[in-house]
Length: 241
Image (cartoon, rainbow, N blue to C red; front, side, top):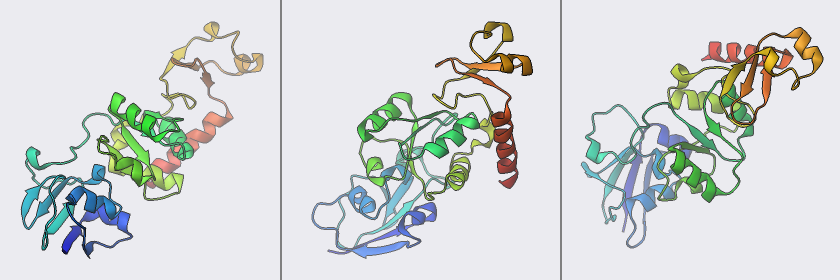
């Protein structure tokens, strides 16, 4: 038995640019099994056609089938044929443990990103609980049937990863620098100097007048040299987009 699968758009990034595959899938294999065998998690598949007709992931492949597999796009497709719906609202993320630098960048820009969970099953559980998108380079985690939203980072360079995420999820309109805690992802709220006199060094109190505090972990932030370095990074990064 031989079938053909044609990948389109960004899905080809996951197969080193190759887009056409012809192979023997074996007996009683679903199209989901076959696509994921190629290294494309179902979370990145928007819709599938078979010999010109829409099919879902449960379709058992047959000899001679020709499948076209599409990533999220603006083609006019009826909702009933969409396999992975577009994420609605402001994107939230859960990142795997290997993406620490990317997480810092995202939090710096005010994008909600949960981090620090080691076990894959717990990452999946957290993403489902919070309706968040899983960010990872581990494709196997995104092949779990229960995963709804997930993205495989193509690059292993954090700054390039950040660009990937910004373009993939149209994050420009959601960027709010310095509104999230770099340590725990909590929201930062302004606080009066008088409220934190016993929580920061005296030299800081004598130098700065504006402070923010994490509503979750209580960490206090002010505009020191680290803040200036991050501001420069943000300005340069956004200008490069």
